[in-house]
Image (tube, rainbow, N blue to C red; front, side):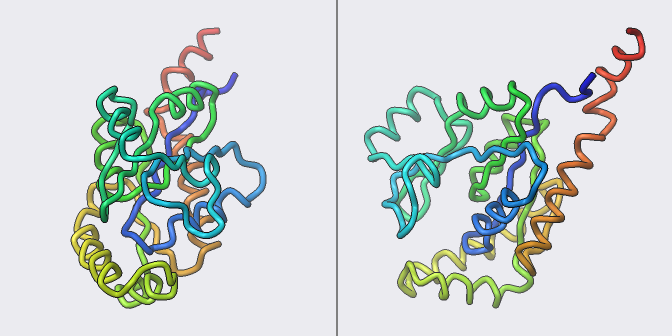
Length: 205
């Protein structure tokens, strides 16, 4: 029998510009996994190449605020004038099917999930240096200097919250970072506290 019937919720988080999306895509390009991506909802407009329902659910502020009132989010936050949130019903549905659900979210949202999903796996993705982070924000080419500086100042505060996570992964190389995260996922499945109940039950049978 399978020791872990329910899937794992894997939260990949970190400052804006650290490469969460790039590492997540590299992770999903790996073979022999049972990962599914939890698509977040946002009120920000799509960036070039982003597809509604694949990268985000793009909605207006009124729709998002209605979902907040109805408590339909596992987490939500407002950042640089836009809302971001994770629909809880989709996450639970996939976990119950035994899927490994990956959330790629900002730090504020990750800390909300930590309060509600104690058994989730929290991974803090960090740059090799602060300069590398600033350079990535500039090279992204999607925002002006004022907004980049605002994101960088927020990142400096978020670095100090790393202790609230289970693991820290340095994104020095995208594929290396993805390999480390996959190793964490496999190790988590073997943790005694996740498997002991089902293991003892299997012995009784």
